[in-house]
Amino acid sequence: MSETPLADAVERFLSDPGTPFTTPGHKRSPEIIDPLLARDLPLFAGADDMQLSGGYLQSAEALAARLWGADHVRFSVNGSSHGNHALLWGMCRPGERVAVSRNLHKSLLVGMILGGIEPVWIFPEVDPVTGLALGYPQDEIEHALEQEVSALFLVNPTYVGVMTPLAPVVDAAHARGIPVAVDQAWGGHLGLDPRLPPHALGEGADALVLSVHKTLTGFTQSALIAWRDGLIDAATMEAAFELGHTTSPSGSILGSIDASRALMEDRGVEVVGRALELATWVRAQLGAIPGVEVFTGGLGYPADPLKLVVVLTGSGADGFLVDDDLIAAGVRVEMADRDVLIPLLTVADTRESVERLVEVFVRTIEQHRGELLRGVSSAAVWGLRPEVAMAPREAYFADHERVSHTAAVGRVSAETVAPYPPGIPAICPGEVITAELMDALRAEAAAGTRIAYCADPSLDTVAVVAP
Image (cartoon, rainbow, N blue to C red):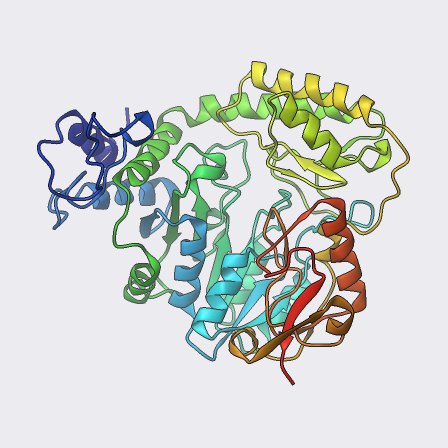
């Protein structure tokens, strides 16, 4: 069995915490806490002492570096958002430019605003049938690399599981001396079994960030970043990591990363093999429902074999109503909009869990069949190309005013607008708001999609840069 130095340290502390005069304030007191808090402990003066003299975190990170084939790994309790910030600030300085996926996570946009870094957008191809974002064309990447950028940052796999082969991308960037980082938040399992596609480092990228809590088995908020020496300076990256990390990291969350890594090292073949078999079975069952399509990529871009993306368009069923019925039956999916549902399948699923999903899904679709007129889905919004008027940081910190949605057309946005999940910005600060985009987003809001990161989620009003 693989050693788990940090997870073991957590267990030792919880079995004999002594008489603590440190945080957390509840001190796991049996007179005060409930089971929710019983496993809460800090890293400092908890799993290790204030000087980290036990070296448990460092040992656990070294074991993870070995598994992912990296020179360095850092564990984060701030999710992949923190990892994205660290990688961005570790590769780029204020005033520099980064070639970055347009269907990026909001955290990368925040990192650019805080760091004064300007994007050179790389637009994914869009599936003409579903409106879902696909992979990144090589010529699009080549064009972005010619724009005096300091780094290339891609999301791979995308939120809907689509993958871009990275080897030619990495070759093109490295030929220009440009490091490649990958937001692999939704692909923590990749590369950990020969039946899965390789992870980003396995395809030659210089760095990756992944969410251990999304498709692996860490506590919520657990993530890691991994990088190789060469085009990335280790000292600069360490400083960037510490800049955005909390000074009060949870020992429980960090220990769960260590335990998750050990699980994949010891039983990865077993649990991944089971998950792959279940994914194949679910696709066949759901794909047999008339009018339902299980999305598996398109235009030559493959998909993560564990990702389930269910397109309802042909059934006429409203995804929001389907989701309501699923929740009522005790089945919760990762994402639902009018046309698409994403039930997240992981290494923790069983035959019983997926059979329940299929049973309820089939029944619910039949109850909601209709002739729903399909417009532009929130996913299709991601493919609309913006007109950039100013840098995101400049627009965000500029004087602004709030105007009606009609008056906002043609103005420069001062805020971020993103259908959620997955939190991919449809409008970024500094971009000109078009009528097409505003109409599509307002239609999504009216249909029930959560519009996030803006002050008025109905989009009746929008913050724009003052004249």
